[in-house]
Every structure is written in structure tokens, then in C-alpha cells.
Amino acid sequence: MKVIIIRGLPGTGKTIVSKILEKIFVNSKVICMDKFKIQAMKKEGCFEESEEIAYKKTLEKLNSFYKQNKKEIIIEGLIIDGGFYNKLRDFINKTKSKASWFRLLRPLEKLLEIDVGRKRKMKNSKEDFDRLKEGIENCKIEDEHLIKNDNLALTIRKILEKINQKT
Image 1 (cartoon, rainbow, N blue to C red):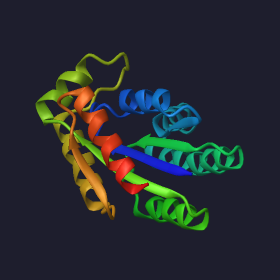
Image 2 (image 1 turned 180 degrees about the vertical axis):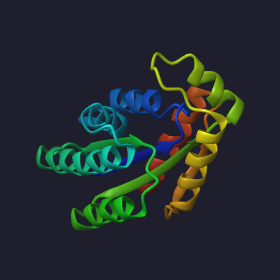
Image 3 (image 1 turned 180 degrees about the horizontal axis):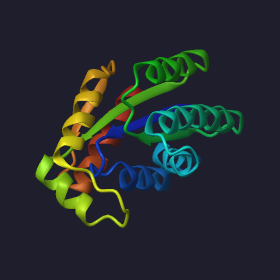
Image 4 (image 1 turned 30 degrees about the vertical axis):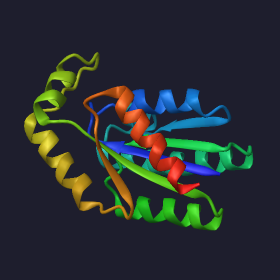
């Protein structure tokens, strides 16, 4: 099994890239961590608790898809917690899966522009992005590929090249 992890700040294109990869890989599933976070925020109202719930539900889904013999599992989310990273690594090692880690990048101005156009009540400020960027950079991921997502087709091609190099 392949586990493809797409992480990055809000607005970097994680969800779009993951959905495209899901179409390319026939027997695949996407785990969107943000959906779990949003559901938990509505119930719990606390960002830290919602993040923990999202990590827990992501691992549960990952195990479920593994048991269903999915060939590729795509996880997309912010991922700034070292403990969660370690749990993902443990799962990958235990199941002898192949992992490919990607962090999508975009300039701050573009992220702010995208955030303004989103249909959600809460908007991220420059300070929010700075704090999230610090968190994502502090969570060091071994063998992570950094990809500037300026061109969607090129981003997908780069990801597929890196995944194919691993097999």
C-alpha cells in the first residue's frame, strides 16, 4: 500500500491536489483532516481539542482503508503535530507501506487572497498564517518533498514522479 501525505497551509491546494490524485489512482481514498477538524470545532469549540480529534479520526480511517485493501491512501491536512507524525510513521512501518510526503507551498499574498474568497465565516489573518507556518516548519518530516503549487498540472506531475521513484 502507498500512503501519500499532502500537507501545507490553508489555501495551498491540498484538497484539489488530493482529489485529482484520487481520480488518478483507481483503488484509492482521500482522508481530509480538515473535515474532521471542522466537525469537531462545531461540537467542541476548541481548536486544540478539535485538532486532537481530527488526528484520532484520521488514524481510524487510515486503519479502516488499510483493512479494505486500498492501494493508495491520500491524507491531506495541515499536520503540525510531531506526535501525530510519529503515529503515522509507526502505522507506515507496521504495515510495511510506502510513504510519500509532500508539502505544498504558495506565497503569503496568494494564501491571503484565496482565504478571502472562501465561503467560511472565520478568515485567517497574516498573523494566523505566520503562526501556522511556524508550526508546520517546526514539525520536521523526514524525506518530505517541497513543491511550489503555482501550476496545478505541474504540481501533479511532480508528485507522480516522486511517487513513481519510490516504487
